[in-house]
Structures are given as C-alpha cells and as structure tokens.
Amino acid sequence: MFQFGEFYPCSILPEAFDGKPLLVAITGRKLLSSEKSEHFLFEPEQLPVCEGLSRHLLGVYNQRPCYAVDVGEAANIPHGTEWRELRSLLGLVDELHFNLAGRAIQIIQWDREHLYCGCCGRPTTVNEDDRSRACHHCDQVLYPRISPCVIVVVTKGDHCLLASNVAWEGRFYSALAGFIEPGETAESALHREVMEEVGIEVENLRYFGSQPWPFPGQLMIGFHATYKAGDIQVDNNEIMAADWWRYDGLPPCPETSTLSGQLIQSFVDSCREEGR
Image (tube, rainbow, N blue to C red; front, top):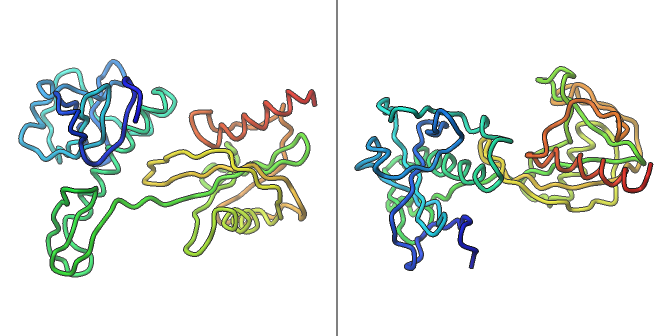
C-alpha cells in the first residue's frame, strides 16, 4: 500500500487509520505556516480557529489522518504563525510536502467553488463515498478538475531551445509548455504547442516525468524532443523571445524543484556525460 513515514493520498479514510488527525488550515489560496519555518501541519489543539469547521481528508501522513480546513476570513491565528502563499514553499520543502500543501489548497478551492450547482444553481452536498459534490436536483456530480499540460525541452546537439514568456521580458527562460485541448493526446498537443509558440517541428518525443502544479490546478507532463525542421518564429503573444542555448551557457532558468528545471538539468547532465 505505502511505506509508513510517507504520505498516502486518499478521499476515504482506511479503517486502520483512525488516530489523532493533523490539520492544514487554508484561507483563500494561502495556508497557515510557522513564522520560523515552513511547517504547516498542526495538531488540533494548536489550531482552535479550526474547531467546529468542516474538514476534507487529504490522506494519511505518518500513520495519521491529515485534513484540510477552510477557515474562511478568520483572523485570530495562533501566535507564531502566519498566512503564506503556496509558491513561497517552492524549493524550500521537499516534493512530498509541497504536493501535500498544493493538494490541500486545491481541494479547499474546489469545495468553495462548487457549493452550488453550475447548471441549476441549487446547493450541492458532499458525497461520502468519493471526492465529489452532488446536485440532487439535476444529478450533476462535481469532481475536482485537473488541467493536463505538456512541457518540453527541445534539443539540437548540445543546444536546447528555451523561451521567455512575455511577462518575463527576456530576464528568465524556461521550457515550452501548454494545455492539452479536448480530443488531443499529450504528444499531439506537444507538436501543436511547439509549432504555435516558436514555429518549429520536433521529433523523437521521450516521456520524462510528471509533476502536480497547483497554480491553480495543472498536471505537468514532461518530455524531451529533438529538433526536426524550421526556424524559430515566436508568436509574440505568449512568447516574446526564444533561442538555442548551449548546455554550459544557459540563461536564468527554473530551479530543479520544478519539472521544467528537471528537464533542463537532465539535458545538461547528459551532455556532460557524453563529454561534449
């Protein structure tokens, strides 16, 4: 099932785990954290602000059930704690804890946004047998939505293609990425996004890995690909600059806590191993 000391995500608590819970307090898209550390998992007695509020099971953490609690606009937080943006934890906590924090915020956001049915406007109720809210008037079942995205580092020999978003104004470069549209495979979305954003064709797609990306609710699916044909022509809509960069002379890039940074670092490592 899973190893103790890790986190097992679930929407229904296994009977074997009914001990003292741990709480993650959420307001808006912020979570409560210690002022002196990135600690955000609290004992119930540490968070009197959460007493009487509904809880959403995240899973089992260190053999204990872990819940997210929406405290709304509550201002009376315990001494020594502060509200923190999720992005501030990126690179400061390990992958397990970052994904746990992201899961908590996304589940609270989903619950808050689906209190009423989007079809008939009537109140919804929480289902007890899975992670969903239901409208019993028009039989709609509302699950948390995840938007799949592809992200790719395109390579040409010892160079890789990196691009700068219009918001970055050329100060920062990353891998190309985009949402998968209805009716597309991840591979077809990758070909389309690369063509739309920089005007080139790619081949030899190789799956690398995936990463939950809770800004606000994506699943990033990472690939490497090699250049096939075409000249760089940025769309000037999402991308303002793109270029080929040699592995030992890269511009400012994402950290390896992100999938983009991992893709880039994997390319750099392979070039070094080959002695280029």
